[in-house]
Image (cartoon, rainbow, N blue to C red; front, side, top):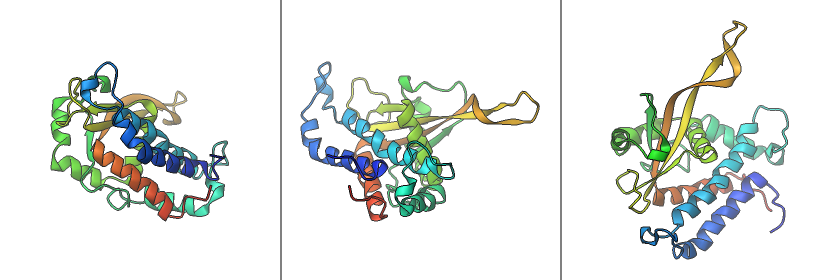
Length: 236
């Protein structure tokens, strides 16, 4: 393949094509250490999800209202920028065309000490994420908050593999993902002028999104489809 015309959009399209084209082969690839846990499809899906989600966000949405940048696709299509403003910046997650109805659950964790994603999800939070309140919380959140959590988790390693019960399962196949993003306070300015315009303070909470693996693959397809039907994707 040659140089994409619209890198932040065409790369996600190509990654989705790899998922669809290689899924059957991935289902025949098992881990050498624990082949009984099933194929490496979770590894494959998460690896492809990183550019599918993060490239258009970083090269389009995060560039809005900024001076021209070094990795900036805004000038390629005004329709691209407007779609991200209307759907992501101003819209609700429930209204987004890529929202999988009742597939996502959301927990806002403010109780310290905060858990370590490497140790899985605490039982009380896992139980909450399995309930109607958590699913409704995901539907009611702004699309900008939802994408910020997902982008941050994929970019900074805040991903937990969960079993069919939403728990950490070293001895069980992966059936769900939890995407965990930290919420930080702002640093106090030393000059006595209040909050600093930039800089992170202490960790104040964790935002957690949970979804089944099958639903996540379906979501990735809808996400890329939205890029296409919104006339965002330019011809390569």
